[in-house]
Image 1 (cartoon, rainbow, N blue to C red):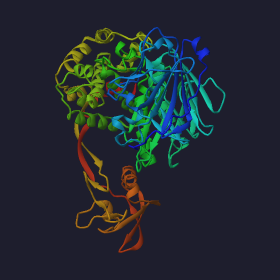
Image 2: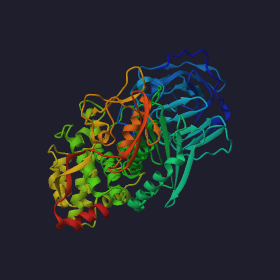
Image 3: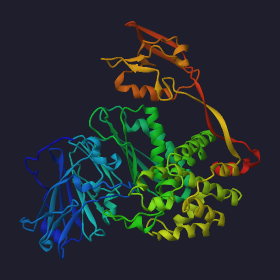
Length: 608
C-alpha cells in the first residue's frame, strides 16, 4: 500500500443548493479531473431531512458473499449547510459518519481511495474493487464511491462524473449529457447505482448486436498487449450461443463487459474473475495471460456472469431484492444463484457445439473431484444461509462445484421424468415468468414452487441432497443418461510432470533453462534438446522469466504432430531446432457413454 499523507483537500465540484432543495434525488458528483494523492473527491447533495443523517458505505455487496467494509477506503468526510457553513460530523466505529443536525444538511464531501494499488487489496475481490489511475484508468465500482443515507435506500440518485476528454466511460447506464467531459446518469434507487459499474479509460471498445441485444466490450490493457477487437470474435460467438440456448428467458437489450487487465509485475489487481450485474459484468485477468488462454477464460467466466441474468437477477428471494448492505440476511438458495448459473455456463457450450460431449463429461468429473475437498455432509441450504460466517464461509467455493452438480442432477431427473422433453432450463423459464426481476419470492416458498412445476422426485432430491446431508451418488444419476465411469487419455503439459517442472530459471538471469540430471518429457527428446539448453523463443515468440507463464499456458493448446520451432542456446551458442510436438499421455478417470439404449434421452439432455 502506498503510504500517502493528504496535504490539502482537492476542490469539490459545487452543486446549486437552491436547486437541490427542490429535488427529492440524492445528487452525487465524482471528480476524476483533480486526482490528489491517488484519491478522488466526491460531493453528495441530499434532499431535506427531518433528523440526524448517517452516511454509510456497503459492508457486503450482492454476489460477493464477503465482508469487505468499503467505508475503510473513505477519508476526510465533511458536511455543509446550504450556505456552505461546516456542520459537525462524528465518525462511528463501523466506518459510517453521522451529522446530528441533519435538518440543516445540504451536502457531504469526502475522498475515496482505491483498492488495486494496495498490496493484497485489503481482501477485496478485484472485480468488486476500484482503480484510480490518473488520466489512464478509473474502475468505478460505484458501491465504493457512492454512499447512502440511513432510511434513504429507495431515494432516486443523480450521478455526475467529471472526467478528462481523453477518457471514455463504458457502462450500462445511459449518459444524459452530450459533453465529452461530463456524464450524467440517473438511478431509481441505491441498488441501481451499485448495479451499474463504470470503467473510464482511453477508448478501446467494440460493439455488436445479437438477437436485439447490444453488447459492448471495453478493455483496459496497461501495456497495450490486448485490444477489444482481438477478443470480440470469440465473445460474439459465445453470446450468440448463449442467446440461442436461453431463447426468450433473457430479455436484456444492452449488456456491457468491462475487462481490466492487470499488470501483475506491479502492485495491481490480483483477484482474477468476474462479478455479475443485471446488465453488465466487471472482469479482471492478468495482462500477461496468452490470448488463447484469455479467450477460453473469457468464455467460461463471462458466460457464467451473463447467465446470472436468469438467476439471481430474474429469479431471486427477498433477501436479494431488498439487500441489506450492512448486515444482510442471506438466502438459502446459493445452489440456484451460483450452482445453476455455473451449470448453464458449461451446459450451453456442449449444447451449442462449443465443446464436445467428452469435454463436458470431463468438466463434470473435475467438479466431482473438486467437490470432494469440501464437507460433503453439510446441508447446502444451511451453508448458504450462513455463508458469510465460519465454518460455512470456507465452504463457499463449493457453490461452483457441488452447486453445479446439484443443478445437473435436477436436470437429469426432469429429463428422465419428462421423457427428454423438459429440463432445468424449462424450470428456470417458468420461474422467471412466475417471478421476474421485480417480484422476489419468500425464501421458504421456492422449493414447493419447484416441485409443483416439476415432479415429486425433484422434491425427494431436494430434501435428501440439498436440504439434507446425504452425499449425492453421482454415478447413479449419470447412469440414467447412459454415462458411466471409464479411463481416458489426455495429454500432459510438455514442461511439467504433475507439479514438477522440466525447466528452471538460470541463477542470476531471467533465462529459462532445461533441467539437467532428470528424465525429460518426450517433447524434449523428440527435438533432441538437452539439459542445460536455454530456451529463448518458441514459434517466433521470445520467452524468459517475465513471460514463462505464457509459454506454459500456450503449450496447453499444442497437439501431437503440430509443427514447432524452438530457438535455444547450447553452451552459449544460438541454435534453432525444428520438429513435431510429441506429448506424454496420462490416464485419468472420467465418464463416457456406456449404455447406447439411453442415446435418445442423452441427446435430449445435452443437445435439446
